[in-house]
Length: 232
Image 1 (spheres, rainbow, N blue to C red):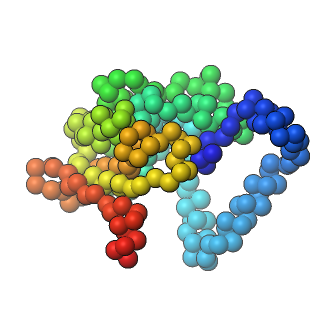
Image 2 (image 1 turned 90 degrees about the horizontal axis):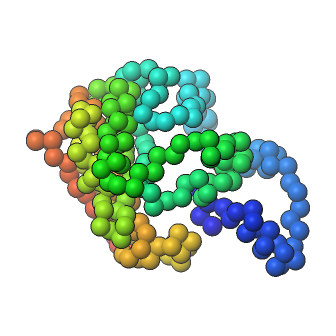
Image 3 (image 1 turned 120 degrees about the vertical axis):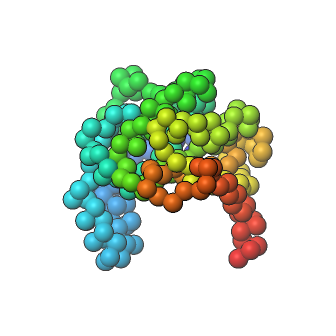
């Protein structure tokens, strides 16, 4: 399965019964500590110092992006986010393992899953207003979206009007177009047909950064994986 998904408990039990297997019980915390130690061992001294410095001022929140009063105005340089792709992803069930681990009941959380593009735009406008408050002049928002509904809806185009009311300036749109491997079948993706076949990142900035005349964004399309390798 993709790294952010896991088969449900019911499905895993059926697989165990079908294969005649009995997975041993493991101490989850010990396995996480072991993996963290492995990952951190690959970091150099300067990286560890940077992480330690960032940790002292880190704020970990579980809250809606439309209101984060715990974060000071003008204190953020960069926001990296990927919003819901309308209602095409079942975030609650796809992330059941994560929810179980941190003790979150999805029934107690009001997820933002608008069906109509207009509803999605209204929510994104509210989010951008909050991000505008957080950013210092010249700060950026990297907003990762994609095409949905068989390519008929391109969220990078739908989001551009939202920034007007929030006061953000568009800088560029980066489109990463690539060929999927068989792994993508887990997502129900078929190249240039079903699913999200591209990554689309819209870069916005709070006034104070360099902007293009007329506030028009630049559209850049990246090389496919094969073309990039050939180029190298």
